[in-house]
Image 1 (cartoon, one colour):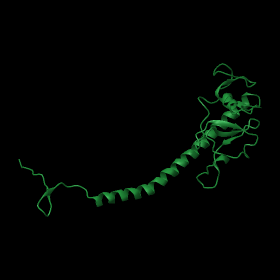
Image 2 (tube, one colour; image 1 turned 90 degrees about the vertical axis):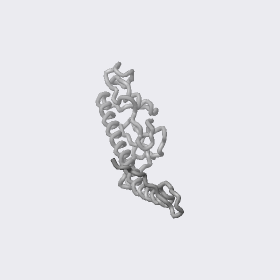
Image 3 (cartoon, rainbow, N blue to C red; image 1 turned 45 degrees about the vertical axis):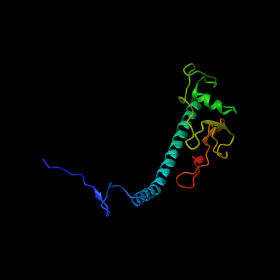
Image 4 (cartoon, one colour; image 1 turned 180 degrees about the vertical axis):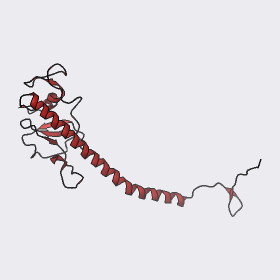
Length: 176
């Protein structure tokens, strides 16, 4: 069997020192990592915005589909018909209801619930609340942290309450 010796680095003075990284080497690595972060981070940010844009489109498709189903089940009335309180919209979709729109606990009336759990949160603001308006297309988004959606119970129109612009750089997300 061979003896294996541990190598030590010897300086000009003859003293041994341990091998390691110099300050310059560490700084070079830090600079390289900084450059990589600067080039990669914007791609992650863009992917995050694309994901939120897709989520808001999916949430609107679900909400619009369930609003239409409610409309069919309730003889042409939309959820929260005649109401000005956005919580009535949530009640109409989250609870069971009769043909005249009276709500009750899930499973106690013939229709609904149309959404299980809670109204989806607006992916851009995190808000689940609904603001009742008379003109959904004309409603001015304000990025409310409590009201994530604009809804008109007379027409069944709904849109996101956000000032964000889509990934194309020009289309407001609120116009989806």
